[in-house]
Length: 114
Length: 117
Image 1 (cartoon, rainbow over the protein chains, first blue to last red):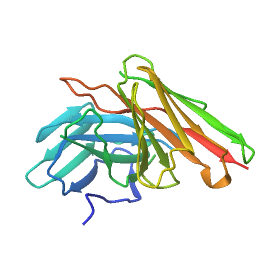
Image 2: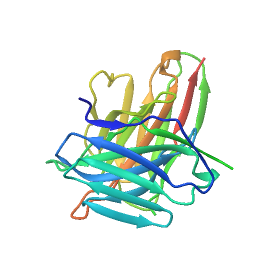
Image 3: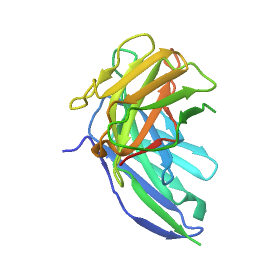
């Protein structure tokens, strides 16, 4: 079983749609949960960062974490063509030492059609 | 927000050339920096982790003599691809984070697209 599972897509939706992106994970040591957006030929941009179960909202984006089910989601409301990108979930464990490595999902490619 | 600057954004050079890529944290002190490699339509692959003032820790399969990492200050890390060959062509991305009581996430540079002819 992979440590992180993310549907690679591609996902294509009309402008204005609600988008749901999901990741499951198996490592109970993951305590910090992130969503990054990556445009083509650019580095990942941090969208959401949370460490607790529940919902966190930032504008049109809502991150949801369910630690008991080991499942995280990113919802995008009123999707725009500018949201077209690859979305990566990422996980940060609690561990000793100062350098903690992220574990990434494989990324979901999203296209929002005008 | 936290900004990480990576330079250059694009390099095209001949086989055998050594290429240096710089990663700077612009508005925070980065005690830890990470170097990744990304192939088309794939996720990021961690190459190495560097902590300021100490030797980098390389992931399995990454040649430390091939990919030299220097993290000489709290705002700058460099990756040098020595004697680059066409198989080294890839998208290289750095990230930086600071650690402390209130942990912060990693912030990424915009990447360097390296093409070896």
